[in-house]
Image (cartoon, rainbow over all chains, first blue to last red):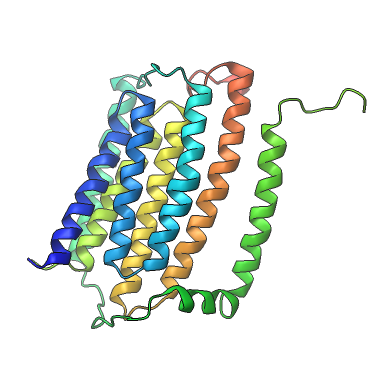
Length: 170
Length: 102
């Protein structure tokens, strides 16, 4: 087994195990911090797939942004010792069964299908410049729409999260 | 056995299922959001893996960038809503917030 293959198994195990903790941990804070290791594992997977830009973006945006936001949410809305009680066996059992069937179907599909795989083409100079090129040429419209979406999101989140909706003197 | 496309797809399917399970079984609204993040990460692994094994076609990477943008936007707005719900109901348990049912 070559060195990158060992790394793949390390990162995949890290992501999978910590995702299991996210789903099954009783303590909300443990789940939030376990998500950190899932994101790190996925970033490692990106590196192994030669997606250097996405790996850095994953760390900066997911861990530096989204995860911090989620942990803030956890700390603002739950007591630290709070546990998330599941809805009882009667409610979790159907979901577990359906998820198991879904996983089985996906695994069967993924392993049986004969995917079209091109001979690999390593890119020595990284992907960042090429992604930037595509963002302002072939994918310009989605890029602009994403910018507008982020602007609207900022305004919407600020408006929704405001403490008091109306000013007293207005 | 050398690591190929199938290995990445299996990992992605596993993460996707865990995300679905989290959304379905967790009652805490923030934990449900974490499940959504897991699902989006699984989708991203798929996009990047296919892009890698189809002669490094970078369109998959661009799609993954847009998925990350949407995940950030979704997390911001959803957490704002969850905070407002907590102010109104003093809980974020999805089972006890049933004002619209009555």
